[in-house]
Length: 269
Image (cartoon, rainbow, N blue to C red; front, side, top):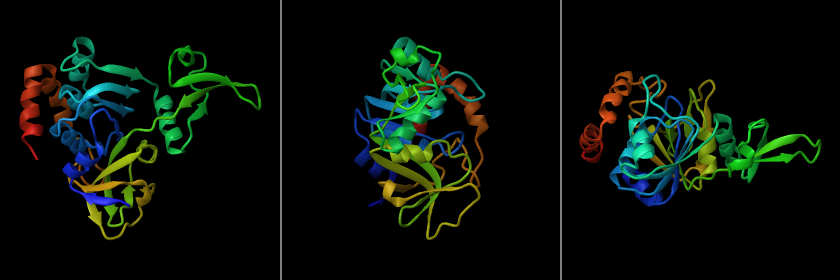
C-alpha cells in the first residue's frame, strides 16, 4: 500500500548504502529534491542509473555518493561538461567511479524489460557492432522462429526508482503529463519506488497525452513543491536556464563545488 511520507523519511526507509538507484526525468520532472536528500543523508557506494545524467548526478557524484554509473549520455544540456563526473572518472575524486555506457535505445529497453517482468527484451539495436560480444547486458542470438539475428538486452531492476510528477491523489495514483521519458518504466521496473510531487489533490482530472501510474506500483508519495528545480515542471514552473549556465562555474573547481554543496544542499532544507 502506498504511503505518504516526508521526503527525508522516504529516503531513510528505502535508499540504503550499496543500492542501485534510478532517478529519472527527461528535460523536465527531474527529481532534484530527492537527489539532494540522498546527499544529505550521506548515502555511499550507490550504483546510479539514468538515461541522461545531468546536474543532479554531477552533484551526487561530487558529494561522494556514487560507486558506479549506468547511463546513455552525460552532460550539462546546452552548456558543456559535467566537471564532477569528469573529476571522478579521470582522478578518482572524491571516489573512483565505474561507468557502464549504453545507447539510449539500449537503456530504454533495459527499463522496458524490467517493467514487463521479463529477464530481457529483444531488439535490432547493436547489430553490426561488437557490443553483444563484450557487454554483459547485451548478447546476440538467433530468432527461434525466423533464424534472424537479434540482440537480447538484459533487464535492469533498480532497488529504488525515484521520479518527480505534477501530482498524486490521496490514494497514491500519480499523474504526469508533458515529456514522460521512461518515468512509468522506471517505477514499474524498480523493487521500490519513491514519487515526489508538486501537490497532492483529491481528484485527478485528465490532460492530453498524460499518463497515470497506479498506486499499486508506488511505495511512497512525497509532496515536494519545487522538487524538480532547476529543471521545469510543465504547467507549474519554467526551467532555470541561468542556473544551468552557472553550474559550469560552480562545478569546475572542487573548492567552489564544495562551497555550493555545503550552502545549498547540506545546510538547506
